[in-house]
Length: 245
View 1: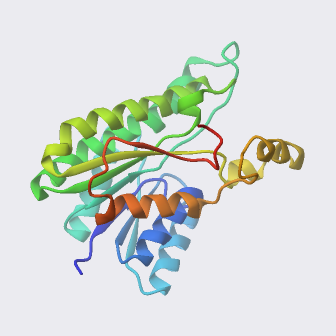
View 2: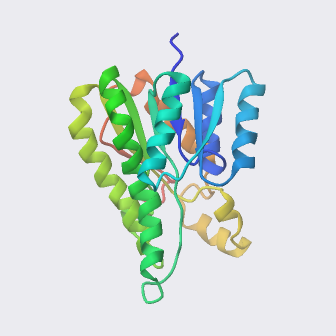
C-alpha cells in the first residue's frame, strides 16, 4: 500500500491530536502544525514515533499567509507531497455583540476562516499536480445554528461551510474532494473548563446524552480520507450526538 502524507493544522491537542494519532495508526505520514503549544506537538510526534509511525511538527500561524505557505513548503520538502489536508486550527473569543471589539471579531475570523483559506490556497497547486487530494475542514454546529455570545465564531464556522461547498465545485473535476465536519460539544480543554452543572445541561440537550470525544471526529476524518468516501464531496457531516437535526 502506498504511504500517504497528511497535514493537520492545530494538531497538538484536542481534536487535532486525535486526528493525528488516528491517521498515523492507518499508516499516514503526519505533518503536525502548531502555533504555540510546542510541548504538546512534541508529545504527539513522540507518541506516533513510539508506535512505529512517522511524524514531524511544524510551527506556524496559519492566519498569516506567509506562515501558512511555509508550513506547506516544509511538509512538501520533508515528505515530498501532501495527500490530505485537515484544517483543524481554530480559536474562540466569546463575547456578546455589545462588548465585542473589532479585534475580537477579526482574530477569530483570521484564524478559523482565513487560516483555512490560506492553507487551501497553498496546497491546491500541489494536489492539482498530483491529480488527487482530500481536504477536510473543521466547521461546527454553531456555524449552522448560531449561539448567543459567539457571533464571531459562528460567522467563521459558517464561512468554512460556504468555502467548502465552493471548493468542492471548483476542484471535484480535478480529483480533489473537499468536505467539512461540524462537531457538536466535544471533550476538549475548553469544555473541561466548564462546571459540572453546565456539562450536565449540555448533555441533556443532546439525544445521545453525552459529550463527544476527539476520537469521534477522527473516525469520520479517517473515513473521508479513505477510498470508501470516493464519491463524497461538498458535504457537511454533523458529529454531534444528534444535537442538530
